[in-house]
Image (cartoon, rainbow, N blue to C red; front, side, top):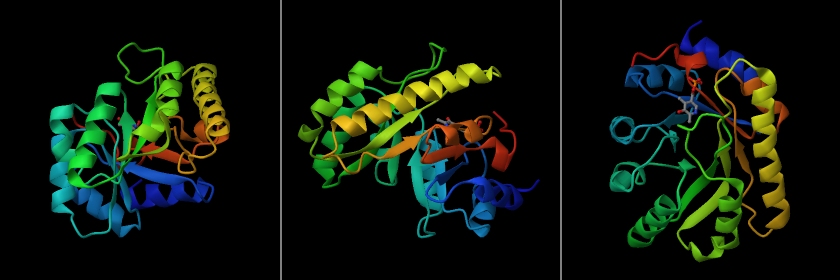
Length: 220
Ligand SMILES: *Cc1c(COP(=O)(O)O)cnc(C)c1O
């Protein structure tokens, strides 16, 4: 299936109100152009340099850019000028640095907090109690808009493990929404990738991040 056809097929299955992020990492600008031609306007990238290059090359094309990868604080200037949403805030240090950058540049940066639930130690993110602690202090981050949670399930074929991970993220999301109703922007739940997005929908995903199922295998 080509890029345009894949996008149309996926969009047909997505309930209205669920946002599709086309994850274009490792794919050339031409692939993004093709997706744009099919009406896809939201794209995700995970490496700062590649993100900056593509955002600059495609400036003025009406793209909503999401950053979804690990972000080091010395790379903020490659990402924050272009990012409409930073989905992958995974440390206190990064959160502080983004807030400082926002203050210096007169911007409020929309972010998702990344919750670590997967079995892999290598995956990044906060634990539930750390996110709770941040949310109690959310009002002090004047240049950050807290828009919800992002999470990745364990990379496995065992569906019950994926369901357990998504269930945990959804439970944390519901808990925070109940506890902090004053943060009305806190409403996004970004879960689900090529292999598990249909399951993620059952757990209330509002954003799915799909790469391979749209653009094909990545050449690393
Ligand atoms: C690469 C990536 C995706 C997309 O993965 P696919 O399996 O290719 O759909 C989604 N989320 C994050 C954080 C990623 O790094």
